[in-house]
Image (cartoon, rainbow over all chains, first blue to last red; front, side, top):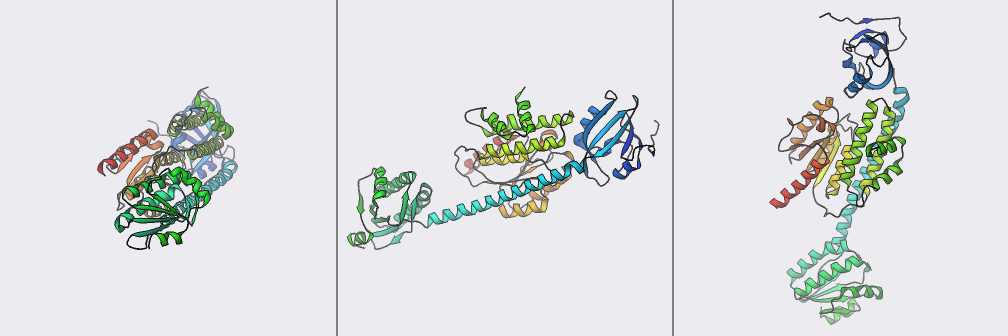
Length: 256
Length: 215
């Protein structure tokens, strides 16, 4: 096999130019090309993998003139996007002229990258804050129904804030297990510090009260405001539920 | 014109609103995974082909990617089916220098759909940065993505570090590389190669069954 030797030429344009044969072997190169690339006889060494198909498709004698955009690998191992101008001088040899596109594209794509990174970071920080907030709400919910032992028979559970489904689900289990372990018969649920009662919250409240009644507890609801009273219609469990206007009266009546 | 060509045209025009409108006509109840696998992924591959056919430039591709990203974020934020929020955690990133990230975002969305907690760290993340987050978050699953074969040595190194973490997280490998190259030599009890989102979905479902069976 004849050994191919590359040689530098000077009669070309002052730009990175190559002459290749149809086996993609480099025959000639300009000084600019040797400065830009680490040249070996094989053209493939300086073409980025993702561009190989494109080169095989477009740099062929049947396309006597072509302009293709491809990625090439520079001497410093950087991938650069270039416009490649191809001219076949005959069926065997082609001249390639290489124009890096960095000047035109790179600024814009760098800006885009930066914006994207910032958006991503902001998004990520927001997510972290959201998770912190969710934990805080959960903690807050857990503290919204302390179980206070008033006497042997009576315990007080003051509820705080809005009665939401989420909050009720958080406190339901702790109320039930406290009611079980304390063996108190009478539970005073104080609504004095309750704001709004949400519809979904009512359903969980109903579950909770029903469970307590099955456990043989007496449930006393204290300090309901008129607006809340209308909501509580939806409870629709009347048996064994007592209602008392104020906490003072409740404590007085249920002998704490 | 087939679906991908239509969608590709909208992406290349930078027409995100019409693209979302077009996808919203694909069914009354949007199945995210179906939209990703049947529309977005093939459309982006089609756009890659257009570049190979010398019909569009890399700048056009960048625009299409940005539009696809926007559409993907919109789809992801649409109402999800009600699932009980689990306790499983997944962390996802693209290895250093790897700029492709759309697939990774789809993976994040898929995990969220199943009620997982997800940390999506984006593409081009150096290993030490990734490890800092991994150690802080302690995920059950770490998803790593790579598209081009010359990232193989880096990928190998990343996996090597991840499988030796003391809580032994499962490592998933995805990206175009998983689709086009044989990565089976990486696979083990702890390392799973994911070729597409359907395989991922089956894996998540199988995994949940395993957890339920043992608990």
